[in-house]
Image (cartoon, rainbow, N blue to C red):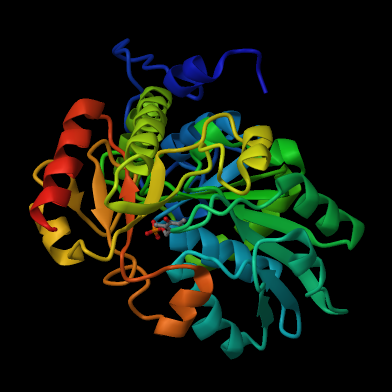
Length: 381
Ligand SMILES: *Cc1c(COP(=O)(O)O)cnc(C)c1O
């Protein structure tokens, strides 16, 4: 990576010079057709190599210490393509038990069709990954901090387990964002983001990214051009624009999250707060060692005397919403939304109860967010 600082890379890396008009932002090239006689590679959106795609890959790669990458039409397109390109019929994959619901559904519903085997780990401990290794295991897929209880997986240990067993390692780094965590520096091979979340950051873009060494990306590309999950250049351009403020947004979100975590922890109507930046989080030291910031996501258990639906409906600033990571603060009840398809027992195994609330901090004033939570708790007693 170049010596430029993260903030500068967010704004400038990869930008396309406007030679024609000398504008200060990257021009947008919407062409799906390019001359074939004066370029060494055929340029075409589904070959993931249009001018705007290449510019954006350069920017995001620089933020994750990756050699290169591919931009997809959604986080799931990035995840599904990366997994299918690296697994053959008869192979086995180890998957973190605590996992984004879409990834879990993809593995459970699609892998059997290709005769790909998988094991979900019992918990996020290193031994639980090690234990699942079989003769036909090819890779390990992790997600840290996890959703919704923000459990922390040891990046360095997982990287070592993978390397010593000749496996590849892949991480969904969406929750941390490149501002807070760079898994490649800890020995993880392939980094994936749902750019719909922090990279986009305004709840108006759906996109995904895969980043790695060039040989690993070349391999994923061989499947990607067949599966066809590229992102429209217009949205590529919007995503480039969004990332210019990534550092500022995520730092403000981290800041609000830690203050909200401390406030909620001291509140008599909150039974438990899950946030890796709190010193009593079981993996606080691990998080401190591998994260640059503790992230904008936090989760808490409302006391039983609070009615969950009433609480959600009483919030005036913080919006009940399925997604996360936008500049606006949002909340959801995993039981009623993201984890509704799991059985009570499955939810319990993951540590989710009926009073659990996940909060995605935005960039609003902490005081306003705190007051909003206070008044909603009071109203729903
Ligand atoms: C949202 C999300 C995804 C899926 O991304 P889409 O852009 O919705 O396809 C994957 N992983 C995590 C952790 C997410 O939050």
